[in-house]
Amino acid sequence: MVRSEYIEFSTRGDADIVDVTEQVAQAVADSDIANGIVTLFTPSATSALTTIEYESGCVSDLRRLFDEIVDPKRPYAHNACWGDGNGHSHVRAALLVVQLLGE
Image 1 (tube, rainbow, N blue to C red):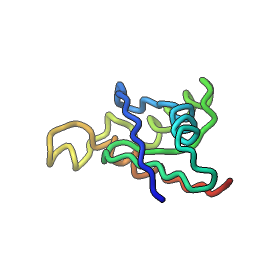
Image 2 (image 1 turned 120 degrees about the horizontal axis):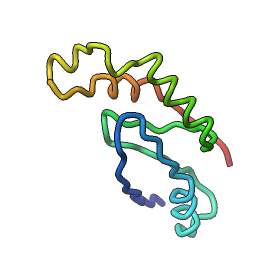
Image 3 (image 1 turned 90 degrees about the vertical axis):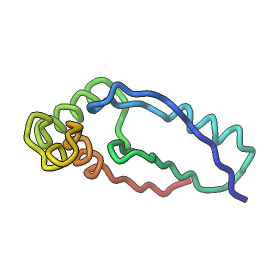
Image 4 (image 1 turned 30 degrees about the horizontal axis):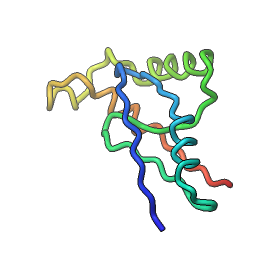
C-alpha cells in the first residue's frame, strides 16, 4: 500500500529554515498505517531537506555556516547564465543530503 500526502508552505528564501516535524507526524498519524517508511521529497532545485535540532542556536549556526562556505555575494556561473541571482541556493541545496532509517 502506498499513501501520498502533501505538505505545502512558503519560505522567505535565502536559508529560511522550516520545521516540518509536526506536519509529517500528523500525516503519519492520520494514515492509519501501522508499519511503513516515510519518504520526504522537495521538488525544488534550490531547496533541501535535512535534520537538525530545531532550536534557535542550531538554526542560527546552520545559516552562518551557509554564509561562510557558500557566500551569496560571490559570483556564481549560474547567475551569469540565468541572471536570477540564486546560484548560491543551488549549491547550498546540493550540500544537504540526508538519509535516515529507523522505526
